[in-house]
Length: 409
Length: 137
Image (cartoon, rainbow over all chains, first blue to last red; front, side, top):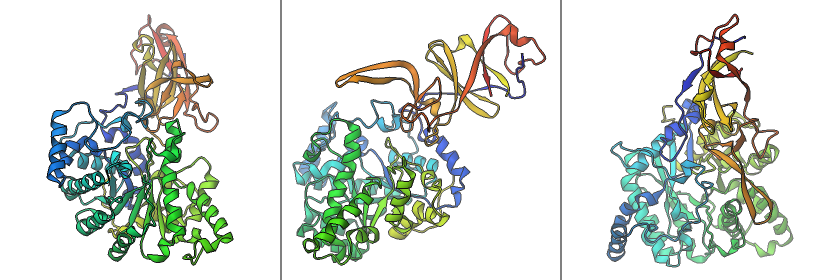
């Protein structure tokens, strides 16, 4: 019998990847892919990655300014067991992202962390190193639905506490970690105070409005906020999410549908209002970033708005050009979750949004549909310069970051 | 094409897998209900350690509201994004024509048969009385 003895069959240590597996081990193949593509010399900015702030909630509530609410929140976490995080309006048990526990990095990262810094610093560093990322913009996760909170003041308490805690415990420990600080948008005066206080603080490169909310972005109350950001040359990001209590999605019964629509719908509504009410015309230097809605919705909305605008321009008299032109020139987009099933459609999308200057790579790590930098690098129809811009240089320009790579792979 | 002895039959219980490096490749061997199958350890979607995902069944439905889990232990689910692959063929469940992981021919032979012939399986200790799993690469 012809049996080869040239190549030794060697058993490899194999262990199922679970919630205790080290990030660097889960992403070992990503790191190999990054080295193979020579990312050592590429600036890679990950403009949308996440941490799970609720794991540190007992610590975060100590940063609530109001002494009564802070006291309540601390007691809540000292004394109650098995409850959700104080003050949050999340979906309780409707957490299906991990497909019933089948995707462990989404289910809850419980790997060992003992580097003497905050766990979120360690976990983010591990992810940056594995993915080949130089700068990572961290977003919260369950807090992204605070815009629908029945108590608008709770968004203020928790949003400010989050900003203060994040800067103190995470961002000031590693200047490669950045934030678009939480704007409590349901209370415009407090949002203004947030901009005044947090602009220029360590790691703050702009501000973020979590998009799930029912207040109109063109309301006059917000104009001062936009002017303040424009003056400071700081971008405003609209980070998408979903909420099962959002009445506009009340008939959706599958997480797949909720995720596919919810993460896009909120930003489509805001973008439509943003453009048709002439915000880019009123604040031409204000840079808006549309985060975690993927890309396929943009060509649809561009065509739809242009088509209707040409028939009824009197309803949007502030516009001096087509809606799609504002969307291409005044708006930036993050890539993830990039729809790649139809490559021709993706190619056209990137052309339509002028990806070479407007598109920003995002991984969304550690969520279930995260993307790797290779998703951009491997696209057959982009020039090397376009790839470099999307993966890092566009972000460096937008956020005024040094474009020299900082990582070691 | 060469054949490599990669495991003893009785070391791999039903439902278990074993990862081996052979001829420069990382290959995962699965025991699916007593049959052996081998696939490459790289997910064709974005490149994860495919074989370190959970071995699962298939959710099927013939009519609305009625679901059942079938084919227990026949699919491996990628630990990164949850793509499901049929361990028997390497084909992904949802996109079998385009997204598939390389699968390798596997056979079982008696140690006695392996010890005969011009080549010895020197790299893997073989005893005449036992059964072995062989992969063809």
